[in-house]
Structure formats: C-alpha cells, structure tokens
Image 1 (cartoon, helix red, strand yellow):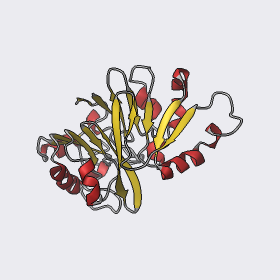
Image 2 (cartoon, rainbow, N blue to C red):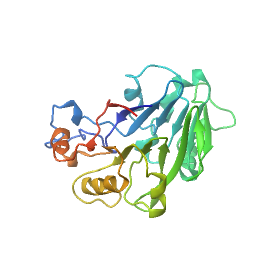
Image 3 (cartoon, helix red, strand yellow):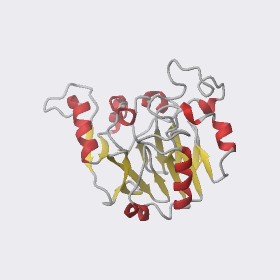
Image 4 (cartoon, rainbow, N blue to C red):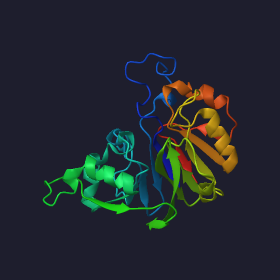
Length: 252
C-alpha cells in the first residue's frame, strides 16, 4: 500500500496569506503546506482521504486514473471544498464518496446541484454513502473501519485502513476508540502548533498520543505556520515521530 501526502497544512495553508513570519518566509519546499489530503493506493484500488480546496493543484502531479472512493473526515471547507474539481474523474463512472451523517448533510448543502432531480450537464456525478463509526466497509481490496475522534465538541471520523490509521483535526479521543487504532504500523495524526488550541492537538499532545498508540512510525499533519520550520521541528522529535511534507510517499 502506498500513501501519498497531497497536503499536510492546516485550513490557512503555509505560507499563510499576508504573513512574513519565520516559517512563512522559508525557502525550504518542506515548509510549503497545502490543505490536508492523502492518496492511498494499491495495485488495484485508489482512495482519496478528504478533498479540500487545493485538490486541483494537488492531483495534477499524480497519474490520471480512476479514483475508487473518497473518504471524508468532516464537513469543514478545508476538507471538502474541492469536491467540484472531481468532475474529470467522472469519465470513469460515478465517484463513491463516504461520509458520516453530519458530513453527508454538509455535502448536500455545499453541492446541492450535484444531487438535484434535474442536474445541470457536467456536474460531478457523486454516489454518496453514509457510514457509521465501527461499521467496516470495503473499497476494492482495502478494508476500512471508521472510528470517532473529537474536533473540540464536533465528532469527526478517523479511518483505519489495514495497517494505517489516519486522523486529522483531533483534539481528544474517547478511550473506547483506542482499540480501533492499536496495532497500526503507521499512524498519521494532526499536530497544529506548539501553543494550546481549543480544537486541535498541539505538537506535544500529538507526541503523547503517538506514544500511546505505539505505531512503528507516526507522521504529523495539519500543521500551521506556528509550529515552526519542518527541518527544525523534526530535529527535535524522535525518529519514529516526524512531520510529513507535501508530496511525500510512504510504502506501508
């Protein structure tokens, strides 16, 4: 299984518009972070996790072939604001999109023209599937188990995909959800910045969580400019917990 980080940044991206801070002024390409999204691929199956407003830019670097499914973590714009740009992939057939009830409702509100009785020609052809925590489903040869984390007081979805656990925008997690993550070889989890935030993990909180899960390797995502520069942050972390970067490819 191949994991490609299409984007590892927070909702504003890095550099942030109008900012000249230490991180935003970096010339290191590792400090250029588009909004969070990931591509999971096997020889026969291709899945996108989240489809944010940078999707078009992100996917242009990838081979043009069928996307078998899109997994939505939650209905915030930075995680599903690029859904209209999946139109070219509809030549392969309807796009299967998987979302929990709240994200499903958000999709219907954001893209009503895709679900109208009489659709305008050329709009994305989306087949929307409602999913629920702990209820497994499969896409191609990939078995997926959704679990729940808390984005402040908003329940959102994390995904266990075989040896991979993928989490974004988490602040807390109920202990009953931990068994769905334990045993993962690779953990992807959010680390927003150094200072506390009401709805996202800090870097220190992400490290503590990574140690609790004990994956062979943890990759940190959804990072803002406030976290610091990629090279310096990674130098402060243990080798098994590192910041991911846009375009990075991991073989699991």
